[in-house]
Image 1: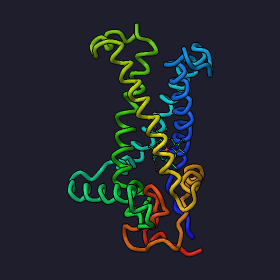
Image 2: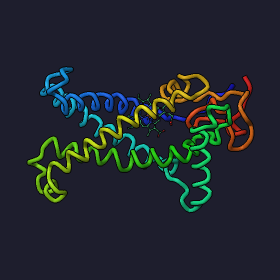
Image 3: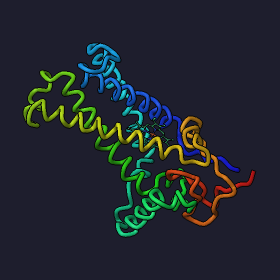
Length: 235
Ligand code: HEM
């Protein structure tokens, strides 16, 4: 068994601060939206926690941006769209694996290396989330936090209801995302393997898994087959 260093420290810090913050934002968001039927916190407390957490995640987002831009590692997020057909085929193969193959013990068609960390489905979804949906959620959150300050832009967009609608739709999206993302994170060789790796930085590679280029066994989970030939070692 060999360990492969997949998650650099700044990304691990960003990720767990972000995950904790998102859970808090989702919960306090429910409280703000349904303050008439849920009594987890008072409305005011929920708004205060929600705003503070939002600002912390805004600052935290810059860890992700700065790390990936300064190191130029942002390329791991960019789908190879100059080969659209090949990319679409790989994405389809990955979707088939998640939808069926994983249930019947097929091999994961993707194996992660630091340079090719994400499978095509992860690339598209993570890029959309990090480059578009989180910024939109942050910006609409800022508008709702001080509508007066941002009133010219809010009016330009179509009013505070539109801003609120976008913010709430994304809240629903992120709530669903966390459930799917958590499920996929438990598909390592043990249910906690990928999650522990996101704390330690190191993903374990297991010898019994496939050596073939681009193939890993089903148990390896969401894009963390993590075993190019050159990285193999036996325990
Ligand atoms: C219960 C909460 C969460 C758990 C247990 C969790 C778990 C994980 C694990 C194990 C990984 C590494 C495997 C992989 O790359 O797919 C990962 C990566 C990632 N997660 Fe999460 N996650 C959580 C919440 C979130 C949230 C709320 C977001 C964003 C809204 C998020 C966005 C990401 C992204 C973008 C990556 C790739 C990071 C990188 O390597 O650049 N996660 N997560």
